[in-house]
Image 1: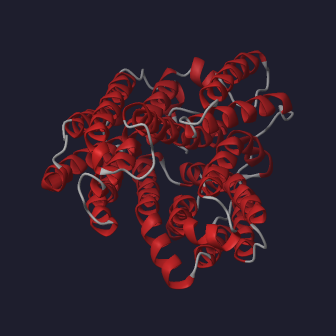
Image 2: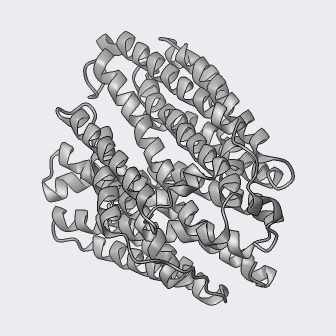
Length: 469
């Protein structure tokens, strides 16, 4: 562990927390600004989807190769470089002359912020003692939830009051401030020995990720399943190729030789895949069958996020004292219970608001119990030279899990309702059934995740004996 004064460590935690908030904000604030951007640049509703898709795809594609880059030039330099480029790209977005330029800047933002995402957890793991990792990771995870919670709200308020450009004007100085904090208060640089860059492995990963994620995100479009299947095939080829490489871009050995890391990562993927669907389906349910306004629906939707924000730091601290698998497994169990209860909501609509809030408390507590302890387990299960890789994988499984969750919802709506456009009263019964099916599928995924969470294997040697990091 680097001997930084406690004040410096806390300020570094504050810096990474700023970016942990801003990363989801950059992804979600733009959603409510889409109509205004579409009007300004004369862009169709369908093409506006690229504002989010371009950011997510670029981010997911760059997360794995970024781990190599971070190890090569150092955590501190990568963080400062990443925040500087993201801040500049945000400022340039304000003056984007056309829609194509704005999309290009969104790609840059998504790609480069991967450097910051990877180094955040890796830096915290290096500078804080093992006895405080769970709590620190809990704080970092909490700020992610704060960003996810505030994103749509801030996006709507700022867009209405000051125009869509204000979103980027807010992001730029905050991201820059985070980089300045790291520059001043992180006194030590961390680098790891790296082999020659795996170009073919990177290309295979990028192609597989693009096809899989874009195919899933547009699952109701013609040809999307074929694209996703191609992506899956490329991903299998990528894994086979990487297993045969002496110096792969992604250390598949972490999955094949480290059971605790692998099963904790699978549990994380399934947790995100099962829980994120709740946000998507409830937002539609409350404003259609529930007959609530967007504001009323938003207030109800806050319950889950608030529970996560309150309890995640607590569960993170508990993970420093007891085996995190007990907390994570309890969390997955609560998530399953919440999903099963939500599947039976039917056509209750606004009358079920209290019932929905109880479900949100259950799922929110489930996610809070799972996230920080599981992330702590992942980071504790790898040697320090793999911190950046492990941090990148955590972000990758989050992105994949969220997209799988949305894919399940969109597929259910497409099959049982026939349209993902604005719901009308004649579709309510079919939509309620689609919600039931999607929640039960998600509960099934969570049940598989429960298995991985409980039977995650013994701690590897470095987790048991490592004290310095």
